[in-house]
Length: 342
Length: 245
Image (cartoon, each protein chain N blue to C red):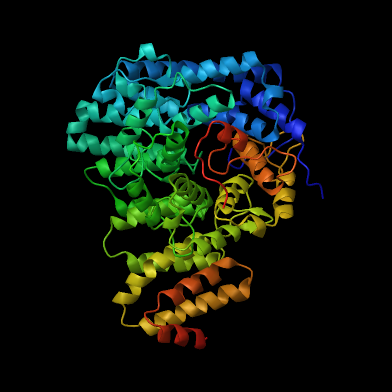
């Protein structure tokens, strides 16, 4: 069975996606910043970013990203809305007199910072204090984070975004680490898994967000039973990785669960051949990786599947950080304290 | 992204291309219109209707769900109990229709919670029946089970009934980990209130054994068994449980 990735085919896929997505993906419009990041991550993981994106294209993407930055107007009202928006569908900033109508969100901010770094930008135009202030506003009493003001949503995904932002900006003053750790510990289940909120089923995506957040905060010691958590993660492998008990294997969990396994020191316990074979089965003939075999690809499953593949096949691919979706060489060059594999 | 099976691609006809172009134009125009209204803080029924049409095309526009909530709260009708009830009943109907398009949408489940919390009179029993219907479409839906726990928390004395629901789900498909998980959240309280604790524990053991015989490789029963052993009050109870099969 083939266990080699169709590198050139995937590189072409990401190049096409960066120029436009099909109408079936309309629902991703509000999160376009994340899909830009994912395409760049996929290219970086394949070692093809510079080959596919010309200097001019990179410059245009950098400008588009910065055009989504919501800057502070100096008032307290605007503080929580600062950072980067999820996309340009909200229109130009100067059309919005009403501050809450033009809000950034933590996922957009994280994706923007990652995207800028991958494109070679030095973040000199990023309003760092405004972003850190926004994080402070968005952290709840429970320790969890909301993604933006005026929403009831809060879960470990946004804790992760806040931690990743803080690590990239090397400024943790917007995050009460003790409170965040307390919330994460409340999401730890007796089976060793971790979840979105107390009482919910253990879930591979939230496992990643919780473990990576703890790793970035230097608090992996807070996991109640680390061996049990590693065991839960490893038991998600049946050929590829599943996200929950008795769900089918899904290519994106080769990153979410695979990265958690790397951070918990379980790299040598993974059946790398089986994960690789499953990911190759999820490849599509025209490029990209789908969630399952014989489905349409999308940038999320393609990027995360490729990064997950590189965890299992480190030779021949740039080494990717399990905590920040950035190449480790970039993380080291920029001296980002990203937490290493155990 | 979720569950789009690949079909053989064919070049769209001229008519289909024109139709697609018109769809895209319509979406973009509606999106621009809604964003403009929002930027100008317009909170009218016309704006409400436009947000509905936009959300029907794209359920994932979280800012538009936010805006829709703000519009509701600014309308005069909001301050009249009967009118608010009517508006929010209709909103529940709208949500139920479109949630089938994307049953994993965080925004729609959140909006449903907001709607029910804002209603003068929420019919929680009806909600329970509706979420049961949704879970019958996707028995592992993460949001569905979480929503079910939220609805149950609004009803009194539901532990025993919910516990029976998990039994029904497990008997339907003993691979349904969501049902086993939910059961583990209910069992301690149900046991504490029961005067037939020993009999109930025997039922749990039978359920586990049944699942193990059905599929020994299924992790569910083993995980549940491990958890059940761990909640026994003493080592003696644990040993007794392990001995009495």
